[in-house]
Length: 457
Ligand code: UDX
Image (tube, rainbow, N blue to C red; front, side, top):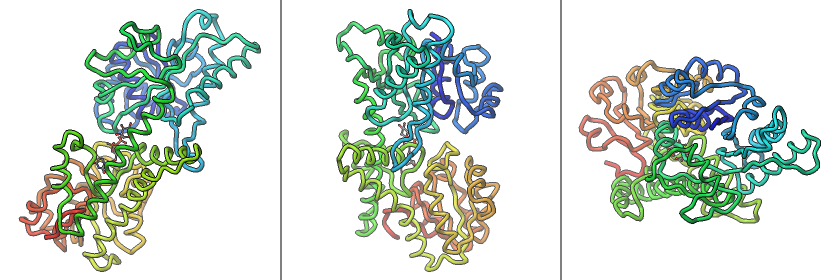
């Protein structure tokens, strides 16, 4: 089956490469000429471990190619996968313009060229994160643009809209695609729920070649759309829970990391997404949480719990600043060395990264800020230019600093050379905004250690 993936960002490119790896013929479509040029040369236009290698391999095998020709790709493909961005739009609602443009093109171009569309069923699979009801809107847009392109009054070609939300984490996106914990397909026609698959289910299993151990959930379009938002909102809720409890632990002389660790052994709770610190960022959790609150409001509901989750997270940068202020007494004139800028390790992504408001506030308060990140330096330079000093390594920014502040838990920051740090810092203070160091270990080396929600020594 020939597949065209619209949008070569994190989701689209990972999907295109993963599907090619599974043996499909995949065409990646994007409007960004520079991105396409890089991809055609086998270069991943962003930082995502493992993607480069598989792009090259599948280009060489001729299973993967890239183009900007939406019309040709729609005519030639059996399956269209929409993976374009749905950024935060007006009143925090998802901006659907790019998705509906792909839907409009699909309807318009399906009508041109040959008569193949009359015989073969096509699939329009939406992977972009969209609010409930969007898949139905996608069908309307496709039908409308088909009819207006053909000047017909009624014939609608044979196509299905499928909602297939992605659950890819940046940094492990490829592995998440190849070995998912579940795959969700929202269908227009209810699934038979019997052992015999429907025609569409058979088509999907030919495209997404997962082995039988992967749970495949067939559900309604609306359920699939909500599952994505609900999953991210729940992860965000766990993190804000841990952060709220962290503040409580700190007040009463307890340690949130030990509390969360013990809680996690309860199989009903688990250990993931209970790490406290600077709060969640990235391209999805904050955006999807805001969108769910906004779309809830549109539906006449006040989603109080989710508003609290957002509020707690929005306050995390202030919490880090409070720790610094309490310790340094005044920020003005102090040199702060910051390790970690990206919203999490193994990515260069700065979208909604807590480092941004924290460093902005430090600068506003008169601090001299020196930064290092293993991947996000170039992107950070675009935002802050000469307002901060950029190091060449983690240790290069430490000389005479009044504090080392950790904002991203990159693995390399977890096992530093304490003797070297001690020698370089003017004041032996480490503020661990991700709770990634062991207080006992740090203190053993003669530092003052301040984590978030951890017992003060
Ligand atoms: C997330 C979802 O995990 C993924 O399923 C979805 O499709 C896209 O959004 P991602 O944005 O890559 O993926 O980030 P994730 O690994 O989930 O982390 C989100 C943020 O939460 C990061 O800033 C991370 O540092 C923070 N986080 C995570 C915590 O603060 N504590 C934790 O315990 C876990």
